[in-house]
Amino acid sequence: MKKIIWFLAFLPLLYIVYKFAWGFEYPRYISRFIYEHGGEFLGTFPNDPLKFTADLLGITAIQFLIATLSITPLRVYLKINLIKYRRLLGLWAFTYALMHSLFFFFADNEGSLSLMYADMIKRPFVFFGASAFLILLMMALTSHKRLFSMFVKWHKLVYLAAVFIALHYLMSQKVIGMNVAIYVSVLAGLLALRLIKR
Amino acid sequence: MNILKKAPWYIDENQVTDEKIYNDRRSLMKIAAVAGAGAMIPSLVNAKENYPGQALNFQKNREFLGLHPSDYEKITTYNNFYEFSLSKDGPAKLAHTLRPEPWTIEITGEVEKPMIIDMDKVLSEYPLEERIYRFRCVEGWSMVVPWVGFELAYLLKKAGLTSKSNFVQFQTKFDKSMFPEQKKEGFFGNIPFPYVEGLRIDEAMNPLTLLSVGLYGKTLPKQNGAPVRLVVPWKYGFKSIKSITKIHVSEKMTRSTWNEVNPKEYGFYSNVNPDVSHPRWSQAKERPLGAFFKQKTQMFNGYSDQVAAMYKGMDLRKNF
Image (tube, rainbow over all chains, first blue to last red; front, side):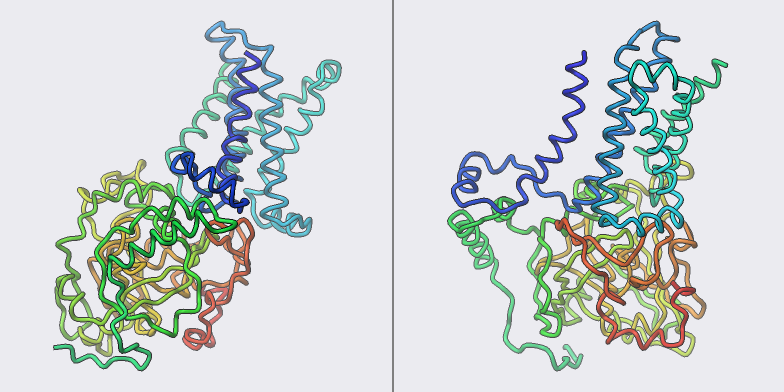
């Protein structure tokens, strides 16, 4: 099971490498070899590489977050106990959120703290994204067994992070499409399940 | 008989590339790409295709030759065409339902001679020219497109302007059998249809404003707005409305779809302006399609010389 999670976790990264690999210049013998051995099947360089990468990293983070948040409802309602994989799933959600944030910071903001600060103030969706990231960061840092028992209360903040992430995702869109609506409804559903339990 | 005066920048000789030569050129490029040093893989793949569509009879406009066009493959697979899909690659896959023939353009409103013209007649009546323009999307990406078309002003002059011709509204065809997203309504719909856009009359009559019927020398691909679309290179891309079937000239400012959907984010003018941010992102830079690094966005998308005078004395922050 853990191996499957690791495998799934690396798929989006492999896909990014695959999309970018063929966009650069190679020595003649390599490009010739590739062309003669099935150049047809190669992907094409993404049309909008910055957006492509940022979106893929962000959406993967959301998928892992959904998986992480599904563990408890699965146990409560369907009696499926996957609790031992929750930490791994959560850490992957954090890892993708980290890559998404770093990518945003270095590629979109060109590594400028002042631009980033201006963005946070002026653009609420960046603020929500960054706040959610800080919560995930806190959780990742305290996810070790010993620390976890001390910080377990604080880990409830993940639901706040989920709300922030849903807002972040919704507000980044021009028009709310099907994909966004589905992800956000799933997040909302998971939150609702927690509230009902109380 | 063609009684339109040809502009001084017309090249006399017939510059249309024969289809066979054109295809040969592609295969030559392919060979060169395999043999050449540092060949890029995407160009190897692209070299295989012959651009679809019918070859058009046009002349190159020397005034607009300075830019290097984006790849055909990029221009035709990265489109915003909400009548088909919200995604960028959706239109290229779904636009096959559009039937560009037969097609008419109806001109109504404050004109001397309201009319309905057939697309065939439009194509034979106006001299087509190729112009390589920058295209900047409000979302922050950009490309360079070799459009084939004619100045909108020719058509408007033909209809005859009056003292009440102050604004021009354009409308994309509304036909649920051609545009799948037009079937969806209310909660499931994306934006209200039919899509409409507008220009002030001086903007519409500006020599830069084109009605485009093709790109890369062939008729427009369906996903790019076949058979006829507007091209206003100094404004954000959504102003360049696709698959036009109605042109309405009016006295008062016209409706425009994105302005109605979200007036805080999309103004009526929507001129490209690096100094006025979109509420959710900066417009100072843009991402050219296929490039990893951003480049600076120019005022009026680099067409200040031709258009800045029209906005003299206007507060471009208010009239964004």
